[in-house]
Length: 197
Length: 197
Image (cartoon, rainbow over all chains, first blue to last red; front, top):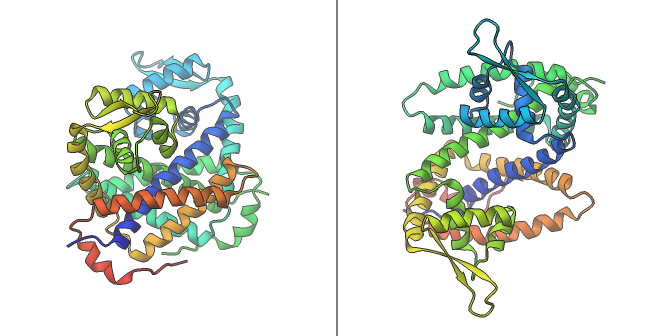
């Protein structure tokens, strides 16, 4: 059996496109957040601390972002130096460190979130409501296969349910934070609850 | 005007999914290539050198991968140390450096390419032929918007035509290299040339 050029080409092309699209979006995001003197990574750390419920330990940020505690710790070091974060000892348990956003961090975070939100809407402006659902469904299929690959023999449904729940909570809070002008809301306001599946 | 929770949530959720999917695929790829003692980045550099036509300069690799010459140069340093690449002076122009894959590099490259190819097919196994085309179309829309954002006022069609052409050339060669057993080729062999657009 051999792969036909057509089939092989389609799969490979899709693969390149997935990576290339992500790369391009990352370059765009870097540009969006640079306006607020933040790297995209710093922005993501700030927004995570802002929207996790209760006091946030570095290990919470690491788990949430799927990063090693070590890399988050180095990142936090740089952000403390840059005046965006403070490390505060927990009152009850002095061994525990909590991360607190400074007022400089807050000052950058809000307009950066709005700019990021505007950017997302711009990039998605040509993707219809139905196509957004289709794209989510397709990405979900890829994620499912990736999770199966990474966790052989595990209960993938269970892993994914837990992930989805904490994402939902975070997004609910984020979306309330960014509830502001967007012409799109008008255009698509009448389509609540429709799905393509 | 305010964003409805539904609309805002959909856009944000899609955004998270795009990033999260890419992240998960990257973790998978790291695992695939680690088997061959390569990082994903090293693999990508090797495969780029292998499939670009003619002698390859570090600047070609940088341009192809959309990376800074500086970061590629550091990467090449590490790969030379690891015995995967050699730097060779050009005979005609002694100032020019060419990159050559060592036999150790070649020995890793071939099985890594096959493993990567198998992985891609596994991940895409639940995505139908039509859905692959749909996914390409949707990613293409995002890329177009990203290119417009990154190059305001430029001729986006022209930029993208040039990119597409060199990608096509590379992929044609890659697919010939990976032309091997794949049950998928049989299943989908009869659908050549169909598009969903």
